[in-house]
Amino acid sequence: VLKMTGISWEWGIVLITLLVFLIISEVYKFAKRKLLKPISVATDEQERLQRIWTENTLASTGAGLEKHKL
Image (cartoon, rainbow, N blue to C red; front, top):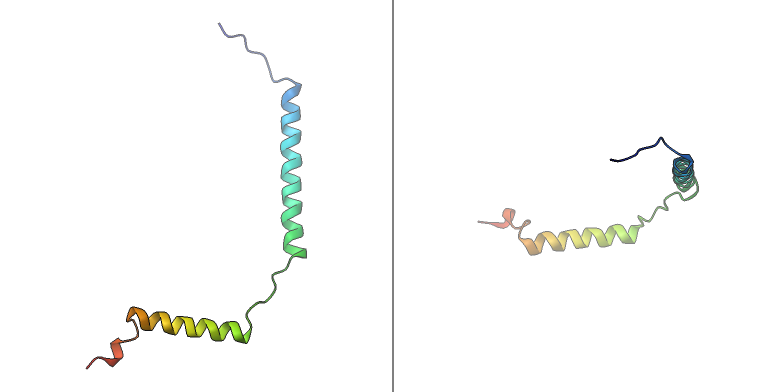
């Protein structure tokens, strides 16, 4: 027969550790949002290269050839 007892002080350590982890993770996410703002990387050169890549991809798949059919 199993002899079960109530929750002991060890579970208090588990709960405190869980709370500390949650608090630290939320503080980290908040700091990341406020301090590490995304840098705008969309330059004219990158936009031009993206447009060329898209045009070449469409041409190689034949998606842009429908209008040239007779």
